[in-house]
Amino acid sequence: MVLLLWCLLWLLLPLSSRTQKLPTRDEELFQIQIRDKAFFHDSSVIPDGAEISSYLFRDTPKRYFFVVEEDNTPLSVTVTPCDAPLEWKLSLQELPEETSAEGSGDPEPLEQQKQQIINEEGTELFSYRGNDVEYFVSSSSPSGLYQLELLSTEKDTHFKVYATTTPESDQPYPELPYDPRVDVTSLGRTTITLAWKPSPTASLLKQPIQYCVVINKEHNFKSLCAVEAKLSADDAFMMAPKPGLDFSPFDFAHFGFPSDNLGKERSFLAKPSPKLGRHVYSRPKVDIQKICIGNKNIFTVSDLKPDTQYYFDVFVVNTNSNMSTAYVGTFARTKEEAKQKTVELKDGKVTDVFVKRKGVKFLRFAPVSSHQKVTFFIHSCLDAVQIQVRRDGKLFLSHSVEGIRQFQVRGKPKAKYLIRLKGNKKGASMLKILATTRPSKQSFPSLPEDTRIKAFDKLRTCSSATVAWLGTQERNKFCIYKKEVDDNYNEDQKKREQNQCLGPDTRKKSEKVLCKYFHSQNLQKAVTTETIKGLQPGKSYLLDVYVIGHGGHSVKYQSKVVKTRKFC
Image (cartoon, rainbow, N blue to C red; front, side, top):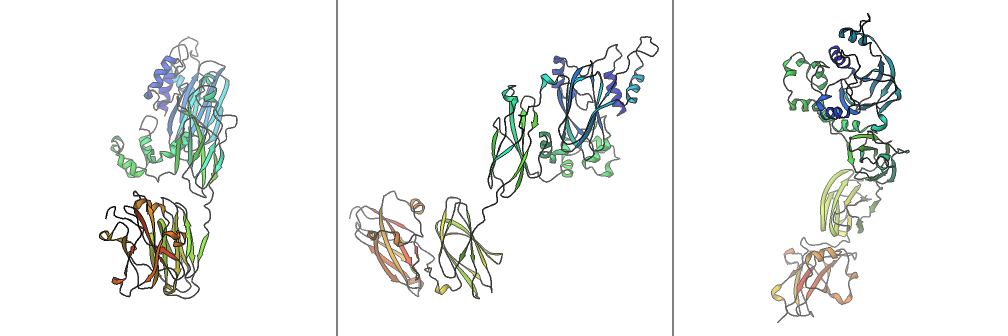
């Protein structure tokens, strides 16, 4: 470090008779310097009017210097901690006399000049400890050599420094409005709307700006630098500085290298493999989101979790300089999920249930008597619905139900059953559900496995159509209805427009063809046919068959469209 300071003082204290300010504020040279990133790399000289980024090892102080040539010079120094609190202080050292003690007019030997500054502690002007973005501002500073010393006692960390002798004209950091708070204007279960007052930098100074919103679940951030450090935590090894004159190669122990390699020089001369660095420094993915939204000063955050606390920060960024200022952040908790009302099912009674699109409904069935098994009958009237059944908290079945389905669950004394119904993504779901411990006495009509209606093409005439459908071993009442439809009426329209749970009581009397009872102990013979007469030539008809149970509840078979012959 002493060697580096001597090299610096060689620049700061030339053997000429005048003091030089480094780096110069000469605009032409300054622009060349600022474009050349290597000019400031690992340099201990702070450039006038440019923000620098650097790295601190834990418990290893770092010093920066700059010269103010003339008395009564404005001065502003800004230090931005990233990822960890910093301790920093700014001190002033008088420049040594440039003539020898004998008054010969010859410059003092350089060694004496260096030693004179090193031995002087200087006057402390300002000190700070914490993770806030802090400033030292003076409208009239004396000439001299200024030293900025920084220390991180918590961990290795990044930081930024900005110093200028022309703070009035520079104004690199965007200004905040008189009220710099971020307000929550709307609160929901999964969304929160934020609003803030616009920065004067855009309206008054006419400088291009954009706002960046940061969302996380841990805490508010004091700077955008801290946010970026958190986002790139997994890449910290790749961002670490390379070995140089200002620290020992043994400092690489901070980056997770095994201790047994520290004494092997080749470990540091050879380029470390990315695989090793990535493996050693890997961290869990951080739960933080940064969204830059242009110059809008209102933003709705979506896809949040219900009943969860989030922290929100807004940063205004000067898009020319890429320097930023933080608004006063806020936090808010999203609303709880609406508590689901649990519907109680009664043994052997059909219950109608409506489930919103992608919604969830809970039903509870608690048999009053001992039972060996429970039978669930589910009739999904529109689109498919997902059903889960738990007995005393244990998942017993999970199925997607479209049309009619029947499930049986093994019983248990005093068992309680929780049924969870989840709606379809396409639209709302309607269904009928029945739970019973006595399936032989249930009011839901029994159905065959195949509920299609078959039309016999060869038996079609200009005025009639013959159809057939399957029955069961139980004696049931079947009613058949017809309705004339357009020729372009297809299966998709039929499925989309019809609620299959609607019974024959919703149909016009003129659409009824007939009702009849039938069954067969031999399931292979449980088939019935019917010829529908009085139809018009070349017309399409929608045919529906309803089976009506003992309790009056009906289930509709799959609809069928038939077309009579045009010429006979």
